[in-house]
Length: 300
Image (cartoon, rainbow, N blue to C red; front, side, top):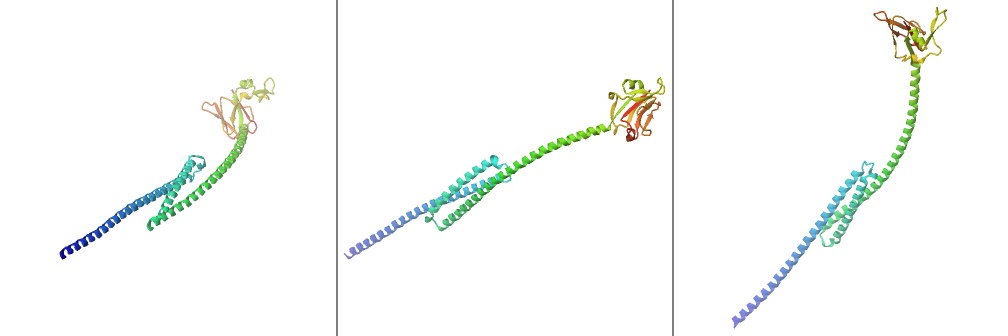
């Protein structure tokens, strides 16, 4: 009987111990499941946070790239306000505003979830938020620069218009002055040509008389008469020369005499090997032409 009681007592004690251990095992299993679930949730949250961080960082990189494009399109570009560059800048600014709006929404979502995150993630979010605020300030400065640039472009356009007006005015004045100067030069050239023009003719008495260049005066029955220029001299019988350039007159005759008056020593009659007077050479133009603008050489 005592043995039976002993065995029953031991059995009940063992049953109690097993029951207690099972409860502990069940509790531990439940705790493990809860921890696993919390771990999965934490991992999911971490992935979501990191994805949001990466998206904001990507947006910031895109904003920086568009800012650099804006700077390239506006620096040293006089036609910025009037060509395709202006439309490109406007499109970039719209894209930047859209990206910043998206960044602010993502940042607000992150901050609303900070209560369940670690201090390290809170610090990361705070640093990212600081970058976004700094970017907002940069965009404000960029907007101010673009507005100032538009004003500068407008002022530059006005300056160019004024300069064009001045250039046109000067051009008109210059054209007028040039035409006046050209007319004066032409007049001077004409006067110079007239001053330097001399008239030369060479021929026999008969030819010169028939051409209404010379006539005989004085004498009796032709004896003792002299050849003189006619008052109504025929200009077409003469060849025009430039007294400053022509120094030799072709004669080509056995005998030659000058009907017009030219000082001796201011010229010379040169003969060739056949003893013909080949040409008249002017030695002193000023002296030679001082008495007359005409040279009439009578030959036979």
